[in-house]
Length: 251
Ligand SMILES: NC(=O)c1ccc[n+]([C@@H]2O[C@H](COP(=O)([O-])OP(=O)(O)OC[C@H]3O[C@@H](n4cnc5c(N)ncnc54)[C@H](O)[C@@H]3O)[C@@H](O)[C@H]2O)c1
Image (cartoon, rainbow, N blue to C red; front, side, top):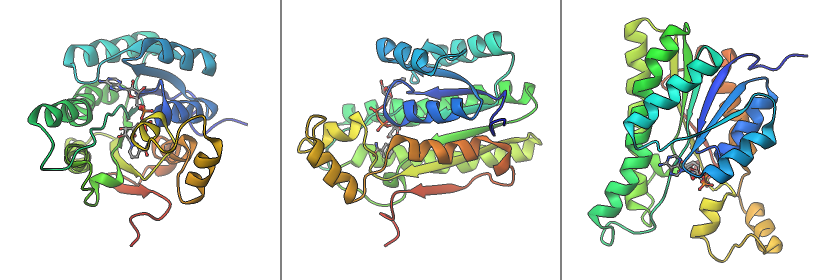
């Protein structure tokens, strides 16, 4: 039996940890040839080795344009094409609008928004040369509804939502078979979430389990949706925004 992503060449940014790592694992299981990128070299290397096969890790700062150019060139050099980009790398600052400094805002925008912008910009020519592709941008429920404790983060994720639709429309207008959709996770049990919810620690299994019971998802839950969006099964889908949040934004 072959996977739905057999032979597709995929880049997952921020793939060393959390949602990115879980997604890279799901995509590899579906037959994709996976390139994990991250600023965390030790964890990124470990993640690629755990996947095995021809999975590759590349050091990559998504906020840096030259870094994007070399990652895409290295991917095409190694695998001959680029079919899927998952713009997943992200950071958060916990501060409301009155207490967020301009420096904090710029730091978050540089990774979460400029990183996605640069990824789309540089992936499109490589995907066009490969005959088409799928870009999946990991936004957040904070890009759909107001989230007072995360002012900079919500601004960065709302921008990703709008940019996604613009990229989708751009590629259609150019006649490229390149789709672009945004995914909006709710609380997923990752190092990022554990860091901002100190009452839930990695060692506190009971608390974490209780957390899940009230609505935390797992990285693989996002990976399965990304797998669909990466595959040709979603060929009629572009410019869409998909909440995957255990119903958080339903009311
Ligand atoms: N966990 C959640 O509940 C949740 C909810 C909504 C959205 N998200 C989004 O999902 C994505 C992944 O989050 P996560 O929870 O897995 O976090 P995480 O901290 O576990 O993983 C993020 C990864 O991104 C990497 N990274 C950070 N800055 C980078 C940079 N400049 N260049 C390259 N890599 C960089 C980190 O090293 C890390 O490996 C983020 O965009 C986040 O905003 C997460």
